[in-house]
Image 1 (cartoon, rainbow, N blue to C red):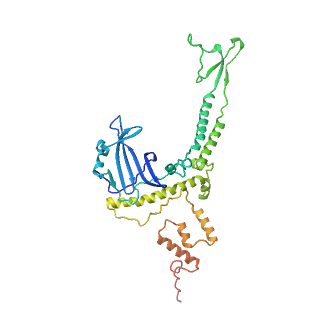
Image 2 (image 1 turned 60 degrees about the horizontal axis):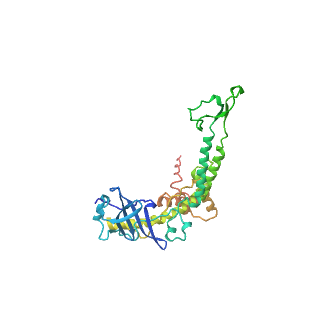
Image 3 (image 1 turned 90 degrees about the vertical axis):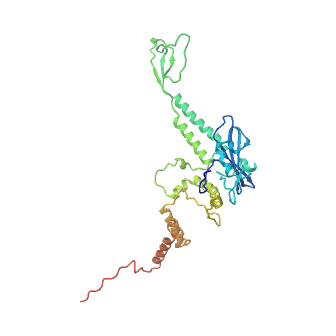
Length: 365
């Protein structure tokens, strides 16, 4: 069986896993994978149950709507190689102190399932059930807009004697796609002439309704309209102006990033443990790492200068912290040199070797 020389992290959609909880914490995760069809009458699924320090495998043969029964791994070509690595209980040890998998919810809490046991831990989508009526109304608005465009086609009112009659027995029929369809029952001597008729189009009103509905959906989903192009401002903005305009989106990002930080920190510990146990990597962690994400809105140099000026005026920041805040990408030695130069300038001392040149010698008469 060909294997990689190191462990790696993969992503699986939430609809392909079954997490198990105990007192609000994940105790096991089962991954469900539908394998290649080898029998049109059955569906083969590989179940991989990740628990503390262990992975248990199982091959099931069933239908589209049920799991079926467990069958030997040799029954499907994709799982035949598993028999070479599993123990007598169809599992393998990972060597990880925790679960070699994690579940990161999209958003919490789940208001509708707060009293429904493990369902409250599954997380919720950004589009919750209370937004469904608004989404239906938005769909209806766009449907009305299409209907408005269809019914607002220009029409021509013509005398009946100018129209062609259909075949015998067909009578008269209505076709809304033809431009000439309305008739006026009048003799030629009446002097009736063709008349143009153009209905009013309510496009602007319907678009206003659609935009207002979309904005309300975004507001309830806790996203800023500017994130989706409704900013109404094309000039360059500072980071603080962007933060104010994208406040709801940034709050959503901060909330979601907390779940990812916790999940990735645990994952790093288990990943190194698997590497040590199976691949003899040798790297260890004394404690879980602290995960940081780069903010989606970066402060400009002007924003940083205003912040430092305010903190310095309040005498609430040191020179070292100023340099660290202004130049976080610099190495420690370079930041220390910058602090020394600033302190030297603020003390009034003169750098004779760097700031001043040597005097020219006096000419002897």
